[in-house]
Length: 485
Image (cartoon, rainbow, N blue to C red):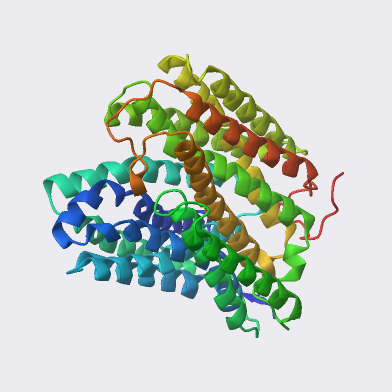
């Protein structure tokens, strides 16, 4: 049926984008704000051996739910779906803030993830509804900036609340922010055009996807830390995940209306763009975890000083995304931005690997900034290419798949780099992957980590090269366009 909805003015569009980015900030903060407060939470609630589940519970549900929200929003509309995600997230925050014991806190965190996974995907989907692909890239800097703020502010707020106030404020702060986001977007979001379509959710496919993802993330989270990689538990989790993934693939082929459209999965732009994002995000998140470890254990910096080193990577990523986002609308062959950025990131990571044992802090800061700048240039290209490749009816699904693989890539990157670190005797501290207060004299573990990161970026470059380039649609252009070879 035809789309319905009143025309939105530019100020109303900016209000909606600001509101959905605020909701996205909520979900991003809750990935980083808890870690510094975990020792305090363990003392307050007891059962410290279950503390890793405070992080893992959120990660599992948030990652697994991303593609499901995309499908739901395509069927029922963006406004009710994003409101439902915020309400679920706030309910989880309330459960966590009032938790009298560790089990309740873990349940609250899992509920938070059920809503948080939707906020990641829906923020980008709503921006896709409001802005044509040719102009959409400039908002990528806003998204990257949101992640950067969460990466920096999350640990600072978490540590401050736990040390000077009360750990529950980590969750209470979500309530006014979430309500503010709903109030901001409520009225203008009513005017967002929606398409009334009679479709249904593939419940079996959704369960298979969530279960397969959860088992895979558990294996990645526990492997090498809680259990050896070749232990029965890890191999069993991985085997069960493979079986469920195969069952999910079979379900996609046989369901009358699969959870993820085969038309979307069969699109070469979606296929290669999402795989490139998966690998680039794995390298980026893995670096964000291990560069502070490198600064502390090898260069002997304090925890706060190593955070300053991290600013190079974060600011570089934001600057790269901003540059790419502003340039994409002005050029025809926008894919070249990703190729140039990926090549820059690869060269910087290769240099880090070569100089890991003798680099100065100034050189480290310069190389991490440049590597972040290069990676940042690739993110808008992947997002815009994938969204531009599908029609409006499949925008939510395509964005959900992209968000899902981006989150999964980050989790896999941390796990893979963690396996390299542990295999080379690097002293780490459990869930937070922080140093144990000791220093290392050999940079070999970090050399291997930088090599692995460079290899992931190189593989992402290959997928960007294979990805067809489709002219970006403007405001008044037909959504069907030929592929540019």
